[in-house]
Image (cartoon, rainbow, N blue to C red; front, side, top):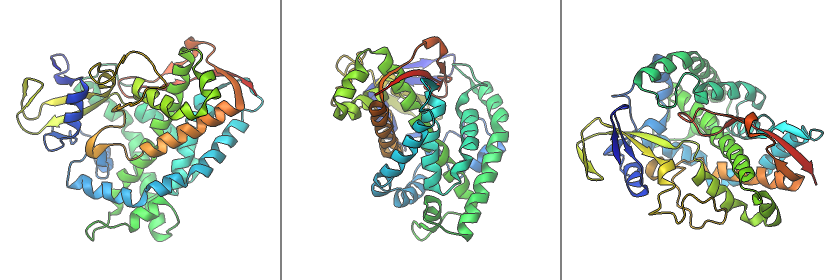
Length: 374
């Protein structure tokens, strides 16, 4: 690990210490508000954003979502995911070339999570616009400082305000008219006899909607690009579809959508032979930890048969991504159907691939592909 003078942060890059930072929320807090810029609309969102919370508040919200977002619920989504994926691919049936992000990687997970939340799936284009603004990083360079972050917050505040208003209306409607959906279940759920107020639920449901699709979108795009750059991979998976889960795990290790996580030091502490003061900012680099030679044999080799694969892409500890099972299920189904439908899937020109800003998310914004049907 090292101290970055330019950004004023401690960079933690090895697997052991990244895992240690993520596993100790008492020392390395997810609540960055004491040292980060603020903005009024984001404060409304933050009330229910348990990704940026520490215990005990985090436990309450995490327990609520665990009650409603069970493994049985996720597994029960398989037929619906298959149906949505089939319909989206049918829409490009007469195309030999299309944008895989526009056609599949964006709409599939947005539609699935919207239906799960009881939000009108017909509004998925609106949700896609929100995600594009929130994760596009158009206001940021590749190494943003606090001033850059302040400007970015102001620039995207109108989008957050629109999202907050939409979510509040949805929550109030569901409170008055409960349904068989996750929002209704969250409204009814209790922890220690306490339920969430409407305003607390705004950021909570918005987080589920936006974060509930963006990782799958990135994973699908990253997988196509990575497989294309390693000739023979898709052919091998087509011949042995049972290898698909391991291949997707290797994509997650290779290109984590969110390659670093920020933590605030709550008290003076020793880490990796360095003395860190209170309120220091630590960046835990998942991408670097995923290629730590002390943890992964031949870490710079893309190996679709790698096992075990203890990557940290979905985090570690209390903030381990609760949506990981859904992202994995969506990606497996989507790729199984892609392999069944197309005997060839290729990226004809890397020059046409438009990437996201890696300072925000590692993924593709546009991904033109050429296909041949079976």
